[in-house]
Length: 352
View (tube, rainbow, N blue to C red):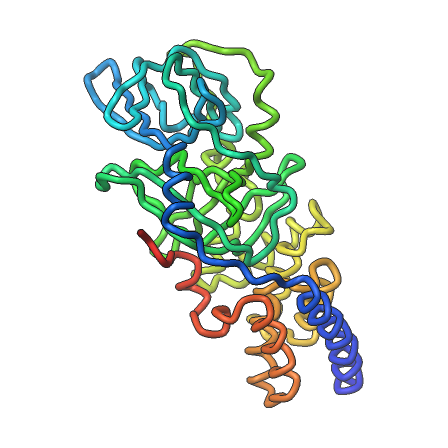
């Protein structure tokens, strides 16, 4: 009975895989590596944020121009500052007022007379898994803008937009850094990471910035609210709650969080992926197969699911089926089969 059920599940699964491969094949478009001239033009829109506190302390961050007098950064860059300025090519300009979306950790700084060079705004709702990204930051230990290339590893629906997880690491001073697609359009702002050695790095979507333009301007010393990512553990999004249990192989905890996540967001491919992975690691391969199958119905090209299925099939000695999945993964991103997943979460490549 079990073998018949497993066979039926495998048949259904690989029907989905064939559809997935067809979808990838007809939509994949090669992307040329950005030129130095192209990157230089993007760098011209970056500014350094400098803050001071009443106690004489200093803080730093990165911002990107969205028009000639406004630049966006993370609100946590401002912290408890009682003074702030931006610097552009060695010249400082005081921040007059700002607009704040505290929950999403986005602040638009108003700076008169700076004549900033604005970026083109993209549409974060159209992003796709494994899409190539360019991140440019101004960390405190770097004398010049730092460029890194990476890819989208996950997209999490939140407040009608998509929070972006990429593999680009960022350091002190890089909060507020812009993330661009390969057409040079702003798609996100580097904002927060998970704890631990193999941290996940998150970028808030550009579409939240677009919704801020009508917010009132406020003074620098206005009271602040904590961002969603700094809320108490159980009030954070499920995609944050599940990271450490997942990375530390606490599979029963992963299962419990994924169960709650699926209940609240039944159409979340990420929630079902973690539910499937927990079942797989807890030894319930039949249930895992059903859940993985459901992930692929929600998201036919879900890379983590395809990777997990390759490992499962290899372990079962089903080499032909595993190779079919590898073909799909190579179409999505050949690097997926070369780099261990834990490394892909934290490493960035091609820095200039």
